[in-house]
Length: 246
Image (tube, rainbow, N blue to C red; front, side, top):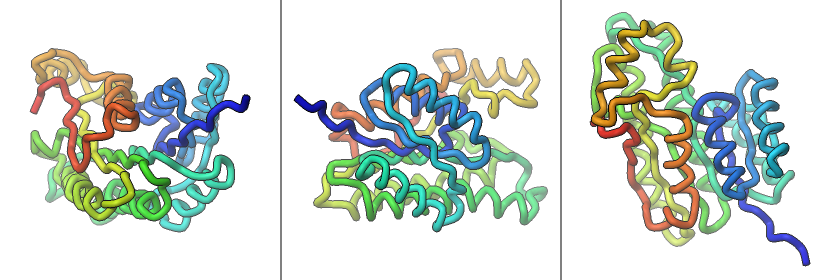
């Protein structure tokens, strides 16, 4: 008797941090995982090795999500390897902070190119190519709620993703595809902790009523819910996974 074909999840920005935790969690939940990365092939391969060592299936796929042609090739590679894609986790992004008056054109363009255009590129491709009954899970940030100084350009990019999320959910009517966004709060990743003094990290950890930073696994659990059968009735929503901070 042949084993059932596992659903396929494509996770952008999955070579480290939250993306890597999501890839590993979805693999444990029975998904075949496509691990997208931009530049660090070794880190992406390490995630794939971990998944395969645990009995899962994984493929690495290099693509700059800001490049629509690269995103198309990434979906092509997933379809060629596994026959199609069922879940897109739109996790790739960059975080830069500075007062708006100090953000130069190059910084602004990079944030918009990756966080907004990159998310759009992957959403558009998934909207065209996901199999019926699939899931699109975008990434925003709880900074859209806190509106802290120095995050203006970043928040602008993420607020736009939040705006597109319920619109795409409505546009995909009839295909049983849900579209939601996850908005993490402060999460203990290398990217978040780098360059922050201990006192600031402690202050951010105490901001939520649960009085700790989130972990990548906390966020991966929310994504797993939305990607799995129990999340099938949630559509067009933004889930703020931040321990009650906002």
